[in-house]
Image (cartoon, one colour):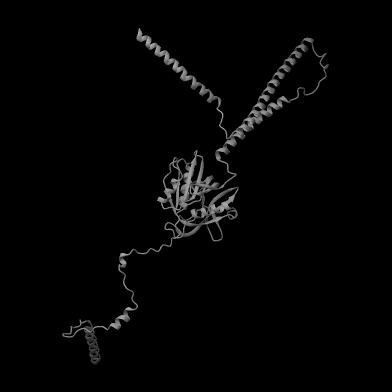
Length: 411
């Protein structure tokens, strides 16, 4: 046992001595010079090493590798005078588009060309502008900023997210699938509109504010010369959908070659302005009343005088002569009254027919003379006459006043 311990102690002491030798610093050899390295060996070692740059790497900006290549930014703004419902619709569309940029309300007196300057200042490629008229009608512009084209729509049947209260709930900032009906590939003006809708409503891939998920669908269907917008959430891979909102219908009016101007490329022939549509409804309601009154007059005029014929000698021996004479007088008076009423109704019918004829003539002359200047109305003529007579009377009054002053001074 003692021998084993001594052997182990000896091994440990040897190992410690070797470690101390390694840890000891190398002694400088006096009088001996360092050996110079061979040139050939240095050249062989430096062959694989690249030369250093003049500036350091730390001074250079770090190259940024961005996956976001499709840099589409949409400027969403409105003009003053839109309704509260239209404003909520604009907010809903902003929440659904993470690549949008907001702008405060634009003044009405400004021209639409100012929007191009706003988009340049905000570094936006596309523009979505909402315009309101009479606090009733909403118009929407979709444009490719500073280049064109631009499309003007009339927005109808608006239903916002707050109104609908639907069960759908998609992830905020997620990327949507955009689907179009078959008509968008057949008609040429719809191809232009389709490209604009894709670039505006489609969220770019790897956008900083977007989520890397696709859990919703935006559908555009063309029906009855209008584009119907719907927004759904994808529930399952089988195709289960629930509507999220908002809902609205886009009625295209015109397509321009430039942004907010330029030559019109296409125009909707079937478009009718909402103000004109309301005017037509009012006219139809008034015509209904006129037709009813006409029918009443015609029925009373063409009503038969005698409902059934009676024998003239049936009541000769019925009562006294005095009573029968009084009855005959009363009948005559009734007949006279009825005749007077019929004459009045006939006169009224003639007046109404004359008025209708005059209306038709006025409409015909208005259509013919639409290019010519309008004739002055009776009120305008009366005002002109009053304006001519007024200064003459004033001048007479001035003269009389002047004479009175002279007389007072003479006295």
